Length: 410
Image (tube, rainbow, N blue to C red; front, side, top):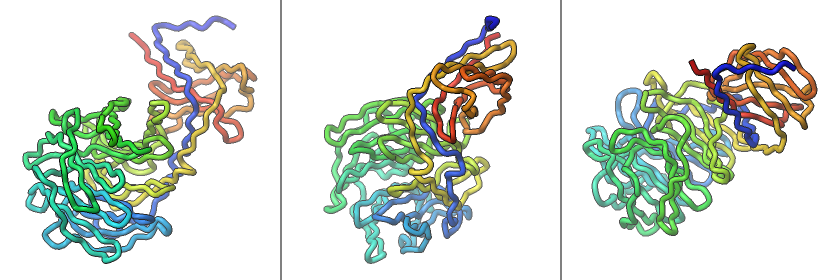
């Protein structure tokens, strides 16, 4: 075969362990949130139910009403609202096995709050508890370990995200104490999750108005923070995060360029690698309320790219949408700039039995035209430039993939 000529082309092909993710059809739209559209609310989970409320409504007011979503039926039902005058947005919520808590936020007058409210699921009633000491804060983050909720970050009455204190709250004794500081600049609207006894913080906007993208791990036994990674895209805030099987999953949010997202990313805590998954089958969004059951991740409400508030509710199943399959199959790829073709070769795959597709980082399938195919080589005509994932499948099972990045110089 004539030697292929490459003219000032830079090609990086990285072999990946295959991470197979069902595409956007794995998302299921449920009944809308049963009140007016809103964003910047809170959610907490107790047993087989999620409790969702507060936030800023499409009618221009802060809210205090709450609704319950039953994981067994995916049906909404109303519960008690916060008492009149205690409506808010930008609060933080956490829970134990019996009670939910809503802390801080901003009220209708624009005042930043430090009050704490507890919801009793048996009595269907909200009770005022001991306020958080120190400065009132909004847009805080939290971790829960056992009976203790750790709250930190957030912004103050001046809108400055400068809080570096970590406050520990005992949900059983209604007692607060300072439990250290964060070792990085304070931030607000960061995304947090707990996995395998450790806390994880990603994104948020810091004291310099920078949209952060560092991922930190918090050990509650030693109170040590460790930076694990840096997100491969732009920094964000107003994003959702959840955990499943030793991995973190990040969804939606907004970046420094005011771009909203509808993408889903995975961070594997074992391999310390990021993986782009398929995008969400509806509008980009930020600031929704998210929560998870043992088997599903849920996202409701939020605000879209053109600042329209939403009341949609969606879920994605862990079992059907987030499947991981590792493979030892190897392939090699290279590009011919002259013919604009992608050459795929393999020594241990029968390529005549293989189906091909290329996804961009938004999960969209790119157009391919097979020009030549043998058992060991395929030549593909394409019009794709940038970053993409080449996926090879046989009998609907993915057998190999490559992440491709190529850039032409002048």
